[in-house]
Length: 107
Length: 122
Image (cartoon, one colour):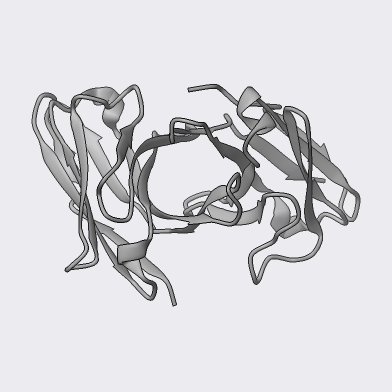
């Protein structure tokens, strides 16, 4: 299956905006989904397809998609947003792939 | 609410077998595709295997194909992962996850269990 590429780490000042990117050929055909994982905890879905957040996820989390790139945007980052973020996508054979993850640090 | 509870993890020697279970509740298990995802210590998430709602289609990641078998019992709302010929590199927390579909091109893991730790060591 195809791979997904993410930046290993990004940092953002408290209250500022950060964009986490994910690139891969699968994204031309299937939307990405995004997962937040804090140390010692299970992943949590925070955004999926074009414009959807699960209930309970703050509206400072948003997303976009264009071509082979998907983005997760945190507008007004909070201390509790410090975590690892993974993108994921399916391919036409029904296989799934995760990106390597982006560690977000809130300064 | 949706609950996924994994069990069956533990310490096992290389070459041996182990079976993980995932007990599901709070949703229509028999109409949901299900998956196993793992995470080695200090590493990222790795998709392991998936099974359609009725078991009619099964897919595996390259690293486990031929050694692991995913199955389900819809009468018991249970997802299983039989792991054979285990290797040190299979050491990981194993999560079960419920797949949801929003559009024909939008698939995602809507719910996750807390994970079961499998340690393969001599």
